[in-house]
Length: 244
Image 1 (spheres, rainbow, N blue to C red):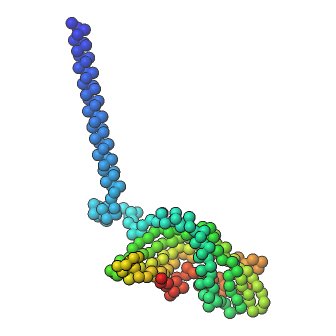
Image 2: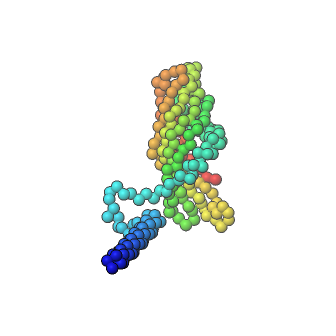
Image 3: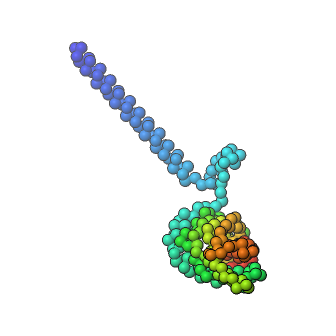
């Protein structure tokens, strides 16, 4: 009799433990499902959704909502095609900049031209893009670019005294914001009449001058002239906005 009672008690206790374990696992599974659903909902949230849920005054000072979007995909493709861009753009930039170099040439020099000009193997990186609302008949896009180039640029400099010095421009570092304007918008493909471009803001422009076999100090004002004539200079780009 005692054996049967013990057996019955063991079965009931074991069944109760199994039921409690199953209920506990189901509860944990439901909690994990709800947590995953909540995390997925937060992952789909946009900046505007965040601002609606929590007002700006509740955010800490280090939280900044940038209007610029990342362009990882564009940088990846630009890196792939950069060898071809380098070859095509080098000749174009050389032909465009040489007249500007001549315009700002120091009086002591008789000639200031490029003997070598290649943009190098390092592609520029676009760090952000934003859309500027400026009218219903156009679309304005601003691209922020950063470029630490390994360009091979050599200037062939001649003075009126007959001195010839090759000057290498190296270690170019540039950060700026380019503006593209698609205007006017039309109802035929590609849906805009022209594209205008300009350099809206130059944040940084650094470079190093190295005279091959000479002293840079023998040519006063050369560094200033080159900085003015660089194709990324703000004063040059803003006044020479291009349209296609």
